[in-house]
Length: 154
Image (cartoon, rainbow, N blue to C red):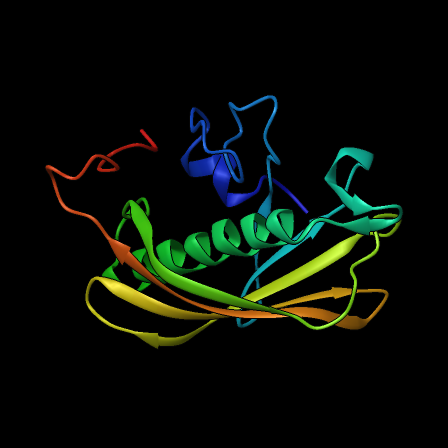
């Protein structure tokens, strides 16, 4: 599958959800796919809310970071940039549709619903064993110089 976008463009990021440099984080690894970005993630025992089921906050972190990267990659492509702009979450929501098991690989797909000059609305779907466990939407915005997150991926 190759190197994920986080390791390619932000190897020193310390973000809990997507930072390759955060040894205690989730270290998600998102990859380009037809129509968007995909993530495959296998939960660990410490991600449980109750025996055998993943914590909703972990699900939120996975979807938030993965959606943010989908926006950054879409903006990079649309603007013809060599690297993605630093994007942050303006808002996001998730719907937990069924308990999400910890003993299987999770698949999250993120796609652009609307792309503007400096922001993207992203739609996300999390499945486990081909069953939809969570859905979400988010608005992710490219930040400008002076914002604390500006160049945080460098």
